[in-house]
Image (cartoon, helix red, strand yellow):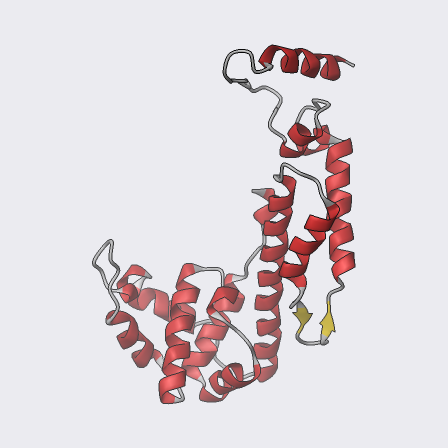
Amino acid sequence: RRLMEDIYSREAEYIILAAMLKHREAGAWIMKYTQLDTSNFYLPESRTYYSAIKNIYIKEGFCDRLLVKNELLNQKDSISNKTIFDVFGGDSKLTEILLHYDIPDLQLIEKTVDIIFEKYNQRNIKKLGIELSNSPTFNKESIITRMSEVVKSFQSRSENKIIALNEVANNYLEILDDKLQNPTKYGSLPTGFLGLDRRSIIQPGTTTFVAGKTSTGKSAFLLQLLDNMAA
């Protein structure tokens, strides 16, 4: 849970949506000069609204409150059978979104787009960190390859600087090395088995069951584990 803190900005997402609905110039700038995609948004309502707004801009060249409302009213949720507009809070949610942007300010829009991309990048990095910490193997080359998939397109939109892959990789390798050497620092008891320690499966104050078929080495494993932990 701690790893997933501050992975999105509701204010930033709502500012972009409101700007596109209230000011054509801001909406046109976002559509033309940014590479914002639905996946860059975190909140379900933000993804839904942005997807609808973007489609309307492509078809009509602009979007406003009435157009997006009608678009979402024409979409049904297969589970609740409600309209998508109602599923995501109806008029009250739309009004809440619109209150986040009033005076046209392209500089604010540019900074807000950067925030959305920054949060999107943080989510990918933290997701990768969780994947790596739960990986049963510790292979540096495979880690670098996986990281390259995540960070190859990372770019600071305001400063046009590409994040160095080796810097990101080294940071996470240091974290993983530290976790291997100091498992108790991350809330788990050291077992002497690196694979177990990296998964942090033995927690203080809990009961851990070891199960398996007869004659598969459970007793020998537990004796070795206890010997390691007592050392």
